[in-house]
Length: 124
Image (cartoon, rainbow, N blue to C red):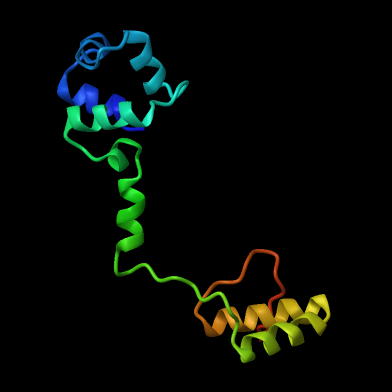
């Protein structure tokens, strides 16, 4: 919750905020330490007081901004027929051949192999 950051940015003490909202200081302290959650009505009062959305107050604005960004792409849930076949064949390989296959595919994709993996490069 962004309550403490909002309060401090405004230069308001917990006591002053509590007085404005008609609660005791310990209530604000509990909200800020997340020992208690504000009621929906109190969330609205807090959001109105600070001039922010309830989502922002709860720290959810960043999440929604990231989800709505055009660069974010959802991964498909269904595998293609080629992916299914590849996975089936891969599972039939021995662990050694699985390591070789992974290293080869990583090199094609421009990825570096993980430490401890088999090196298939020929020695001179």
